[in-house]
Length: 174
Image 1 (cartoon, rainbow, N blue to C red):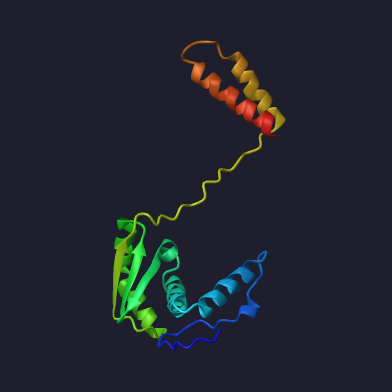
Image 2 (cartoon, helix red, strand yellow):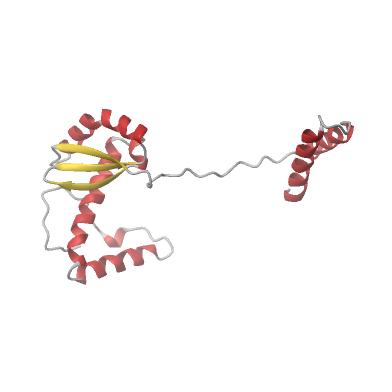
C-alpha cells in the first residue's frame, strides 16, 4: 500500500493479495482502503489507523489475555492512551504497564507514557451459547415416571412444572 506518510513507528507489512478471502470481505476491505486513499480529507486517516492497528497488535502480543477487551485510543508525542471496559481491568492493566511499555520500546515503538481510560460502553460480551445436553430415551422415561409419581401438592408443583418443561423441551427438540 503506497502512502505519502512515513511513520517513525514500525508497521506490519501490508500485502492485500495474501489476505484470506471470507466471502468477499477482502474485496470490501480493499474497497474501503482505496476510497480512503483517494479521498482528500479522509486519506490522512489511513496511516493513523494502520499505525494504531499495528500498535494494538503489539499490545495484544505483550498481554494476550488481558488485552482481549482493551484497545488503543491514541498515540501522540510518545503518550499512548488505552481503553479498558471497566475499572477492575484498568487496575490490573495498570500493574502491567511497565512490562507493556518495555515490550513496545523493544519493538521500536516510541512510547514514553501510557494512560488508561475506562470506557464502560465498550464491553466485550462473551458468547452466551448454552450447551444442550441430549438425554437418552431411558432418562426421559425415568423423568416422566418421576413426574407422574409425585403427588400433586403445592410443595411439588415447582418440581412437577420443571420436569414437564424439561420433558417437553427434550421431546420437542430432539
